[in-house]
Length: 340
Length: 240
Image (cartoon, rainbow over all chains, first blue to last red; front, side):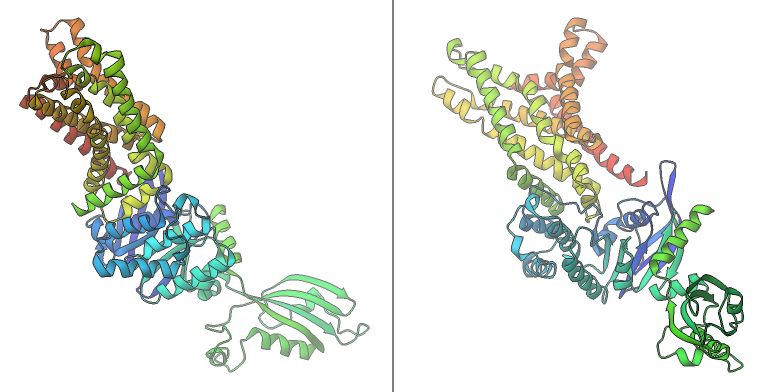
């Protein structure tokens, strides 16, 4: 359980975090997303007791990070972005130090070390010196250190950088499974990562929250419209059934025509935007009910367009709802910020 | 205390896993040995007295100790492990103390390795074991103060080299400042203040085999002061 209230942090004269509030519950993975310098790392440093906030409060399991930093630190496992390791030590010695630091003793200590080594796949390099390890192994050792004491809170700053695709899949699976029983916060600028493992996302830009919610929701709330790509074929080139920009305006509720292209005299490739569908329409069970408005007419864009095309004597060759990817949302949000 | 020992253990392991500690200790033994046997001509002088051996210790420590302490914080900052240390459940005091203990232990090991020197010499004449013990106590106390100063400077420095140079300069200044008072004449207020500041001046009575509580107090309070400064600096950083 993590809670931030109006958190602000400035370094010198620069305010890196400007009033951020959010909460993360146990059993969830929260992704912090944002361009470099958005304040992700600063928030993590405050939550781990490395920096104190300039104002506002940060609570970890209900404990204020300033009032009882030691209690906070013992509940938190932290993987900093730079993956700090003592080059002179072996993997075994490093984990030994981490176990000492966490006050682990006896059988639980041995078990904890064994578990960390297993879940991070370090058994092959246990006796090796850290300076001889590859980037991937270092990253995994950093993670092993963070999860060693089975902390209720895990804070991971860009946990998958430097890993190869197989390792990324492994580590993401590990994080997902850890997220079932812990509060996990991770930062990243890899958007698929958020979609792959996070139950919630916070997009940060210039020290403020630009958007938050579940990865799927966040897209919908933000786009404010649906974008649909169509390929239409008019019945025959000679007759009046030809399509142009104007005739597309007769689609009920259409917002705009984003692009229009005639592939051949009677095949047209079109991209249009439609108003957002009421709610929860992401193709799951709830769809049918919510896609019908009060008058019983359909609000599902695909259906509207299909009906329109039939009425116009057009054939729909392709119809694709283009979900605004997190990537596009991200760019949209963060570039809007610059404009302001 | 367990935490302090965990930090110290980690430090000492790192030190002995790399060639640095061996090189520094070897260099120290080599230099003090050469000084005693060749420069001072211990056998040629024909006196059963190791005082000259111990009087140069403050000067030698001004180089030995920075070599041991330069890594303590500056290296952590370079490797980024500084962030790890400060997010593990340690207090600032424990961190500073753990690092102090490890550097001090290394200095003490170096010093312990000089014990064969008086042992070998003892065959040649009658040495006073009490004086010898006092001399060692003096060196240890001075080393403690020097380690505290070195650690504090390392906590301010950006890298090892500047930590080393800074500490050497600071320690040399503190060791040699009582020579300045010689020029000023012994009686003046300034001169006695300079003497009081000097690491070497307080060491003098130990090297003669005398334990003076004022000197004891000086070393202990200097150690505590600089360790406190280092810990205070760590805490302050969190707010900035």
